[in-house]
Length: 504
Image 1: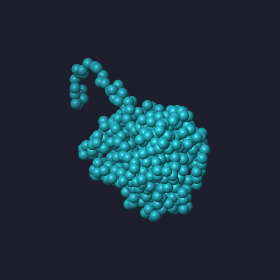
Image 2: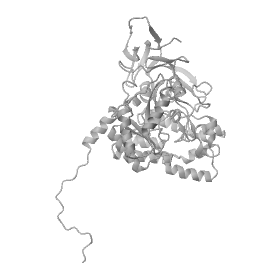
Image 3: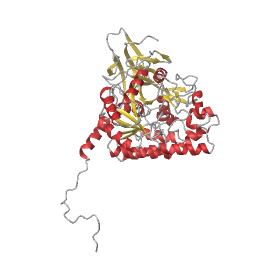
Image 4: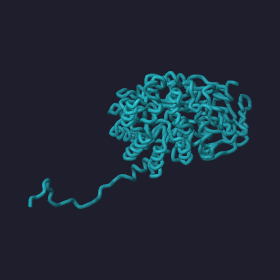
């Protein structure tokens, strides 16, 4: 494969698919940016021009995975995919940007966490990335650091946990304060919505009953646990007029809460993940412990086998908004930290490489969504919500040349034997997917083509995200202006005021 650094690229003969329209057009790229989109382009001079044939293929914006945890120190170990293998696998799957999470311990600096994660990522990333930051405790110091992260570090999203009691979990009072301040800063409040107290009590009860295997994880994180917290998060966010982004929506009940809230006009977005759309939680009852443990994540995959189909329908119809992965891989030996106690199994599974193909197979090939909605849920909506649009999430003049040539007719079979992730297990093992990335272009450089990589560790860039994304905040600001409560004008009360009833 030729070297593609500093390339002039002409993508010829494809159908350019954005979230709002598809057109037969060529795309000309120079200096990492889309310069022209139109029929029969013939850029000059022809020397030094690399032509990519996209005949009978789709030309789509590179995917944006809104939820990864690469080289994440968690539950006594560190996730297997680091920022190199994780982003290399991402581009092989047609994803050209990830948003990871900097997660401080309780009582620790948010800025230090951000700087630590960035120092891990910068030398390793093969594609562009950004960082959400978790708020795991609350104080005036945390408020000051949030403001600095927004003003100086390019952060416009903060994640709050309602689960992981004694580790990351916030109280309702802290959530109220955090959501209020997120709104003031013009950022997106994200939430891991599970009732941490109920999980802790359920787990204690199940372990006492002798249930120590992965099925205990699913039983302790029942659907009610997710639905209750989702409802509570929506209520708190709506009270303070803060836009809410519910990460990894896994159950029908939680998805219905989000759907209902959106139907009532609340500013809330739901993020299902590739695994929740592709497989189900019956895997937790598999008799092979390693197989069952490989699927452990929080919230768990739904044990109801009709859930993936249900979530995909909501995603197709705009009740749910974007697809992430929660990619947080641990191999069998790491998962074995919980071989005698399901609460000690490191939580996480794969998805960063397979997300695009799984959504095409389960969404587009199945007839639930069209190619434009596919682009919306895998790229454009994320770009709009997190204020990256139209540099990301669109193929148009002036946009970053993060582009995928996608073959909608080709198929591939997912397997740990052939995937590019560092893990020894793939939760989609054996799944045949229509929809395959042929070529992935990151910032105007061909980084993956027909199975060959052309990546360098550190070639990706950290992308700053300004606050007040218009897609989200236009409505929020307007409501702030027109929906203020006003006091009733009435004559002052002039009668007797008495603390105790008068004696007869």
